[in-house]
Length: 472
Ligand code: PMP
Image (cartoon, rainbow, N blue to C red; front, side, top):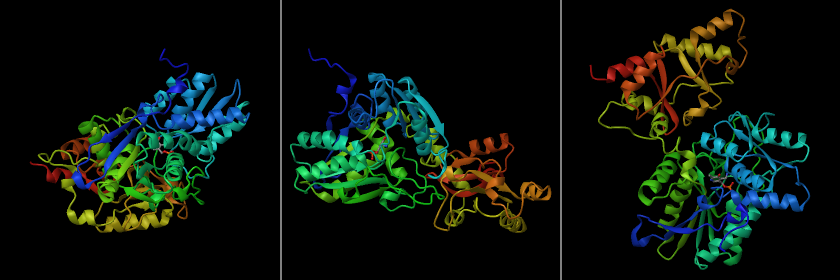
């Protein structure tokens, strides 16, 4: 019989598929390793199994035990699948921006899901990592998987992903391209391939452009589960021990728009429904292939399925709202209400650490110049070259309300303004129809909105400006 005894036997051993590239005869061939065909649906099944096996061997996890992990989703799913098949209880701590599909899938495996706010510095006791560690400690029989620092994470890829790729390419691979989250995939796979090839395989990281691994400042980005984000208040930024930089030759930054549009094209043009980080990886692999020449063989890891992101990268409304799609050129769009000169200027914005007194001064100056006396605010350490991303627009400050709060004693002039924020201004993407945006503002009785392009705030727009650019 060709049957298996346990679902864990169906982890890994994923196929390699040649991807179509537009590079012509000068480009290297590019193969994608389809990790979404693993039993639990992602590259992280491999580490779910390996980490649990190792904990069992080490006597850290046994009958009646509870597996605990902080995860952006896929590691949680891999662990939950293995835990379910072996009868362990599973608790997963997730940032609240995780896609709803992943949360629902975890619950389907019987895991208990604990959601924590996404935008917290590492030092905050409510941070997902701190919360998971606490739960593991307080639960009898609890074991924290700890993928960021657990040697079984890169080891899983050293033992499986690397050898599979070497075998599947008949030893012809010349370049490995992979995203870096915990770093386990690239470190374990890359180390094996370097060793077995006598050091000839080049290992290249694919990274969201603002992630710190490729030299970004750690500001938020929109590709889930890859890269490394840094909260502006994080004091000491610790990189995962699962990431072995010595294995990686270089890291290419890929803009969110390119990642997202690449994964959409993979679905439409090649029938591959994969996630956003696969878009990042393939975008980087195509660049590597163009440089490497026709003799090279590039392999890239497609970590998970696009089914987990149907409400994000594959939802036109979600993309339009963030300014990742250009919309219908035949209609008047929100971007048309933003003059080119305004796009060039830095967006007026208040860092939450600004004092109430300074915020009042800034707002009064705006009113004196005849401009609207309201500003978006949040944690972004804004400067002329920086544009806050949508998640950094945590609130807003209006002159009249703030002045009132000071007059009534509710706000003290020396306080940081962060403690006195009103709800965020509405956000519209540059490609959204201006008419719809105006209708939404009018319905909510609001005057001002933030305009987003590629997920970044580029300008404020008023109802009057939207009205003015619409045909009478
Ligand atoms: N892409 C996706 C979809 C993932 O879930 C992960 C794991 N967080 C990665 C990429 C990065 O993999 P690794 O943690 O092994 O670096």
